[in-house]
Image (cartoon, rainbow over all chains, first blue to last red; front, side, top):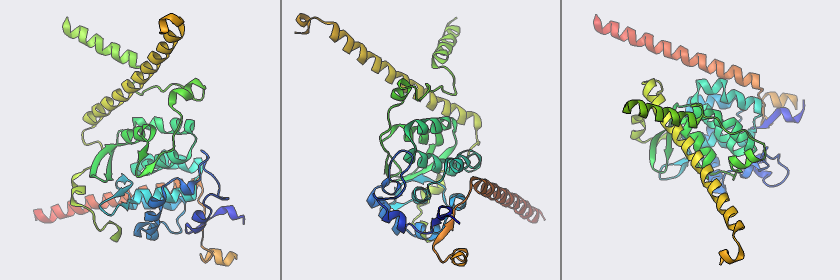
Length: 219
Length: 66
Length: 52
């Protein structure tokens, strides 16, 4: 049996290969260093990581999300404890799931379990090329489901579409610095992306509609 | 489950159940989406304005530039 | 070596395929629906008991 059909049960080799021979993510980054060192250390030290992320493969990830993830977030509380969401994202960096598997997380699984979709979106933002990030993430700007978010300032309510927008526009999400993607309009100029069409349709049409309604109201 | 031993009580107050009021949830989403589209449009307009300004300056004579 | 792998002594875990991930999602979803049905039933039972 070929070696590539197995994962290491623990993260030791993943961390040892830092900056050396480990395979890079599609966007050229080293998955072992995508999260900051201090955050990685907190994750590896956490009970959740030790007990729930050892000897886990791509299918077991789904179990862990369904059982333990009911909010998104990076680190929470006064002790800056990494959330199960962040720990599982770190595990994904180690497992490096294929696009086929990510598609299961996003679509079939994502329809049923919203936090599984959120986790896959976060992971894709960290590891995929910029045009693929836009192409894969933007359709989920239509997903209006609620998400609980836990952060430094306690727990709050957000939405899948807002989370996607954050991933596309912010520098930092869930205690992780997001690598700098080229802006959407630059990729459009390079013919690497088509202009985004909102599920609401053409904005000019929408504004016209609004004007039309105003005019009618005035008559 | 000792990894979430310090779960704060306010968590329970935040309900993430969907489809309680689908119409209101859709309306709220539509508002968010409109804001995003507007933001994108404004960014494009700002960029075009900037390009036009660069173009204008390029067309000025030495005299006018001073 | 093969034996060790099967018993998990090598510290390795088998990679999952997309198909296996799909099946796992299905299984977990079914399990969740089952649990929900049970909750409805037990709630009805409790209401029945109260009514008596």
